[in-house]
Image (cartoon, rainbow, N blue to C red):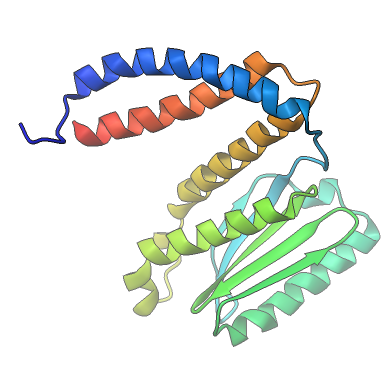
Length: 213
């Protein structure tokens, strides 16, 4: 056995002890940290995600909520204008750019890096979280489909499986945001915060165990 090699079974057994210790530590950490802070801003909800190429073709789309349920006439006009502008904007994709437009209800984030653009429509005030999600989606899409993008034959079906990747990225980022909001919330239950932290740690441990088998 090599120096840094370990048995998944032993690791899994020891991880139970590790998680118990982390639970108590995270409870005290959550309680102590939130005492001096207060939460601010509304939670973010991703409405739509679009991945487009420089010709304005939508390679992949993920819809989480119907935008018409929230829009007023002015929002509808702004959305139409924004999407029309994006169609022109994507034709000029070159250097990496990040565009952000905010309305009363929505925030539109467009992250571009030749040859694609990731557009996210969301609600809430956590603009930085949306930017992080857009950047993560862009990076992973280019990593997975680098060859397909270079020799694209016009078929978008090959990109549809990426919807699961979008779900994973969004769930991961928003979960971290939720944990942060709970920690900063003076009314939050420290036990609930600790449980979320333990849940995240457990998922990471399971991934490590799965890779080692």
